[in-house]
Image (cartoon, rainbow, N blue to C red; front, top):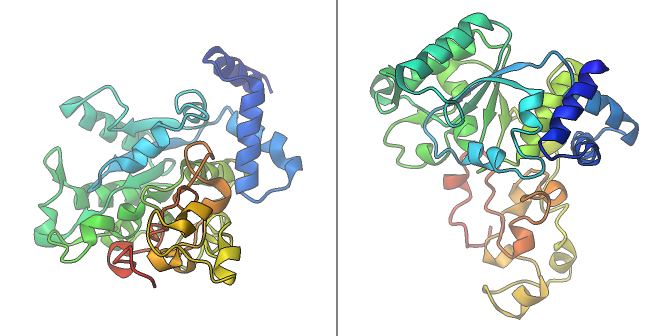
Length: 312
């Protein structure tokens, strides 16, 4: 309990009130589908003294998944998330570079062997032995195999790590694949392009709270986030049932918030909690802003869900 008070004091010193921290814990509790009575336990888990160590690796990607998490303003990443996780390595936010960065990765993997949560962002180029993706002279394939081998669990963040993403889209010139396919290690997949940051945090909090990772669907995605169909939960569903459709962007239907099925919405093919948690601190999401869902949380969506603006 003393540590919890220390954490709350540090968070308050950074400008996040205890009230906002509890609100965030309430949001995480809701995302996990837990009863409101679990909020205090979630808060205690997030303020636990024994923080899990995370090693975050970047492979073939755009860093958009890290940006989505790092630019979360409720709360700021350094005010809460870094109090929950001991991030031992993350190329985007760490101070060292070059050989010093490589040493940091080696030291972290050695010190926390068998105890760290590995978070992967980006697909793995496989063609010609993986030469199309290298970091510090090593192929991403070799780095991924070494890091996953000694990880407590491997969490893939974003469609690229989960299924290859845009790198694996036809004709896939580098032979990019998912981290799981490249390494043979079972992964927890937080799909999306990018995924919602709350689903990343909720997955870690589930482990902190219950001592195990969340139940997964057949595609390795946490059921609490990907167990619901977007079309079934869409606020425009009534317009679909009434046969009221947007015919083209900017028309009368678009102004009235009608269904986007005829301009390409892939909501019926997509499983995600976007309608519930939304983006930008819960203010909006693509369909709410008048843009059809492109199915970015589904494997191989670049190929299988396109063309994006044509009806299913």
